[in-house]
Length: 318
Image (spheres, rainbow, N blue to C red):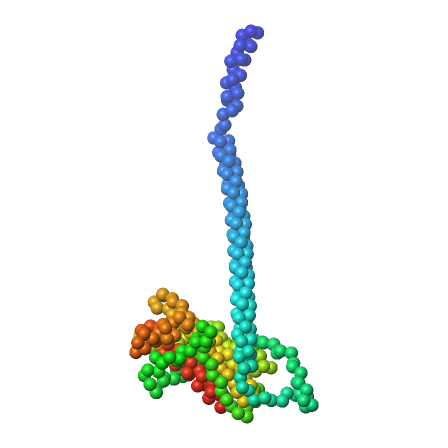
């Protein structure tokens, strides 16, 4: 009995080892199961990765769209603020036009509803300034730069570029006897509309404000002021200024002021104001014998352009 027990204790580990050892067929089956499990795990990982990438892409697109929308909203707000500021500035310009126009020696005209018993005519409420809807106008070339032929020294003469209150300003009153303020206003509006739509005009050049009741117009002009042009080169500056018209019975006054320049030479941009660039102090030498090289050409071209505009205005009204 004792020997039997000893034999069993010796044989049991050998029997367990024999049972733990797999046959080749079993090993192959086990390897196949492990391969299938690995494949399933790989597919699960790929699906998770694709899902994460899709979610990340969707999030990126959402963020980009949000950023674009915010940028657009910011740009719109900026433009709104600029438009409001420009409108307010033009309203102040318009008020100045009305004040200046009130000083004109206009031919008095009876208004509808005026009292004939010697009593004062009741004043109506001031008419509002509005942004006009300009009619379609044919586009014409901005080539009417009239040259002064009477004297080569014309551009050197004092007062060629007049200053008033520290500002360069040209003003001319055109007398057209027998013509109503309404008709003069219509002609002036058509003239400024055509001028701001000519070929050399730039973005922002337009008839900006009108007051039909007071027969007044304000135009902001942005145009190319050409110094010289050839097949190989074009020398010009962006010329900015304001034109104001005030009409009365038999008279119309044109004012040109707020003149500025933006000059680009091979990417180097310079900004000038007429008051510190084309006036006698800055464009004419001390002996008044010649124009200075750069500011002088601005003075000459500006005077020519002013003469062209004012002459066109006179011809339009007559």
